[in-house]
Amino acid sequence: MIRVLVADDHPVVRSGLRQMFEACADIGIIGEARTSREAVELVQRRPCDVVILDLGLPDAGGMEALRAIHEFAPALPVLILSVHPEDELAIRMLRLGAAGYVTKGAESSVLVLAIRKVAGGGRFVSEAISEKVLQNVGRRTSGLPHEALSDREYQVLRLLAQGNTTSEVARQLALSVKTVSTYRSRLIEKLGARTTADLIRYAIEQKLTE
View: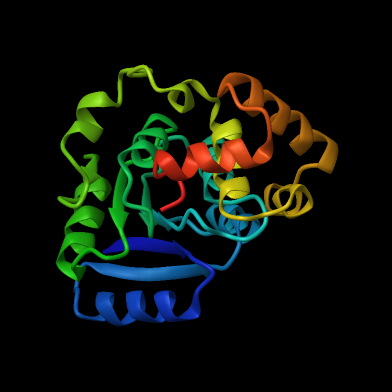
């Protein structure tokens, strides 16, 4: 039995996953988390074989949860389940150590296949994501300014571009407003922008908010 821990803040998603795995004799959910903190705490308390992690978790977010999980259990496969299909985000998560990346629009059979593959020590990306994701995991950048951003800078950029205020970004990432303002200033410098509106425009043009 592949023991799965699900970290997603949407009850409908967690319920759907439970129903999906009921038809699988070799997969079972042993725990559910609604926030990044709960996910890390569950990993520390309950042995599992795979973590299904949503990137849009409240509090610190899925990216920080991935880091924390790997600090505690470096060999534990973490499968990202995200609404975001863009290659850039998938590449970043794989570089951070995610074992796989599946979009929420994928067929249930794809997710089941992904779980079995990462549980067996492999890596997985869905067909919805281009093959270039795996090809580019080992490469740092291809020349676009945002590809040179740190993971935290990239997080702040996406959240600002999604319409969040500095205070809202700080709350979601468990940072101080001053720290987020510092990241915003770095983004303006690195992306050649002048204002937050310029940052938002850049992120939309590069499809970083989808």
